[in-house]
Image 1 (cartoon, helix red, strand yellow):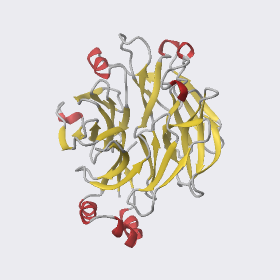
Image 2 (tube, rainbow, N blue to C red):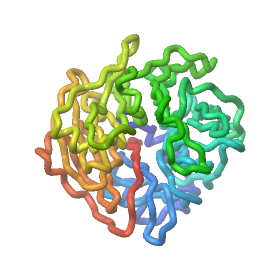
Image 3 (cartoon, rainbow, N blue to C red):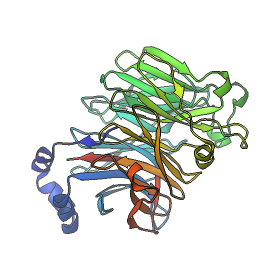
Length: 374
């Protein structure tokens, strides 16, 4: 989604001595120099894991240690509260303040459930919706957590399919969209797909207040092995999604699609050169700050492709080894991260030559990144 914004004056005014005491002088200086920041999970030099808040230049502001590998981070922009989720089949989530005003707290998925690495807040920040796997019964759910009561789990909704991965809140503030990857898995069998012959990915629209499934879309029998995993919402409210193909590795199906409200999902056409560069795997999907450009990354193919949100045309691409994290920068370009510790400024106007921001070979960035402003 577009770059998130936080009230800078309110945030800094409310921080007080706790924030000042918790940040080193170099961190405070970095805060004064920019109003744009980023969030991402990463692997540290000593093999441990953390989620970090950092500047566009790659300077750490806050670091929160994690008990295991993280995946995505969701942010409630008005309050500055965030939650980092474990990579599936992890069971932990870390709730923290983006500028360290409070100690982080941890909560877990219920017994016989694990997180899928993604979640989203309600507009008022009081509820958190997290994708979960009921692995004993092979069903997907959204766990509903009360953020005002220690992230106590208060309800659950059927996700509209198997293997729910990313969940987003539509522009109406009420409708959730869930990417159900269609893949049944169980922690006892690692990441093995247990239902390949019957796999059926879906995009489900769910009323977040009632749990009712408003609509549930699939890609048809011919595309049932294209697991829908990651999404973004463009400036007009259309859902863009990326797939990970679970079929014959020699095939190169279309992987990027779009769902307009009231319509059916459509897969957009890419030339074979682009499809080979995706290597059957889309890792992140993100919208530029102005809502007009979509970025789709592939760590397995080492490629980021940029799309025009209105026409669906390809605007350009960058080749970056092990790239995955993508977040909007001011303007219509992006910050991208890779597994080698690089951060790069990139976009359709760079002519295939992204600019290196910083390289820190001691760390390895994880799959997703969030951009926000204060």
